[in-house]
Length: 421
Image (cartoon, rainbow, N blue to C red; front, side, top):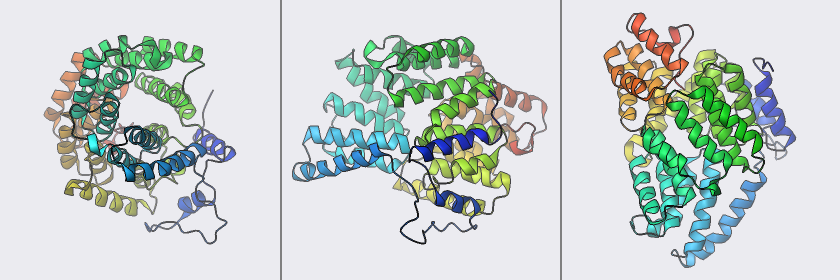
């Protein structure tokens, strides 16, 4: 099936409207609005800005009911665990770091306790992973699995933390050791991603697609996650039509922000910034979406681009002042694609590479090195790519640019543009 430049974006928004989960008048206001960064203010109480999904409303009500118990006794472990899980679930769907902060607050009595209950350590690892503290997350998960080797949740989490760190041998071992309790799609997604990162993407995608077609009991959130991994593999292989179909499926309903952001990155890679503005119009309060809006706004000449860039700069400054976790990948991409400061971008991308070694991180270092006229800075990444066997046509394109193009070119000046998803 062929997806036109706007049909897939519109299908997501239409599905969201049908489900009562979309943006109505506010979306149109944001798309056509002025350059100012002032928030949208409805003219009357009848204007629908955003309809919160029912499960979020129920989760928030349950969290409020737990507050009274925790105010009475902050060490009420069952209440703390439930509240932390609710906050993490909503935090994952909305990509809002404040919700991970709430989860951490619920676990405060045990936060620094190395011998905390296993359930606390697993949730603590999830929170640490979300703030890019991979070493802390790994320490917690290692301790859980030392005590309980059959814990599927901890082993699955550790497998993906290890993938993010570039430790593919250990990640593969964990994927193969997953118990059946994690579900077929989760295990298949884990194994497929490691295989793809090792250069066997075509077979990995085939096997993952086959399992997902058979697994009718998969949890919806896990199904979206597995679908996003399948889309990532398809994109690396250059199978763009398949990748877009999968991304549209993962983002259907418009309420899972990581899926929407992944689709936005695909659209940026495809040179479709106007579709990004439509897709993320109602999510400018979340940094990951705001970054894509700023990139798309600059590429399309949208008058709001300057306001989005200023807001992002403020938020990165606040994080650097110690008021929040650093997200080096996002900040490096901001410097490269919004501020057009490749030297600063390369510094940040290289710092990030020391911590996180996903394909997106590799692309970012290569693009920044190219734009900064520093091809030697890309060598450590290219050595890693060669050692792992990773095959990604976008990384290969950047490798060729580094070999053949003049130094100092900004990626936006190249055809096709190697964006840094």
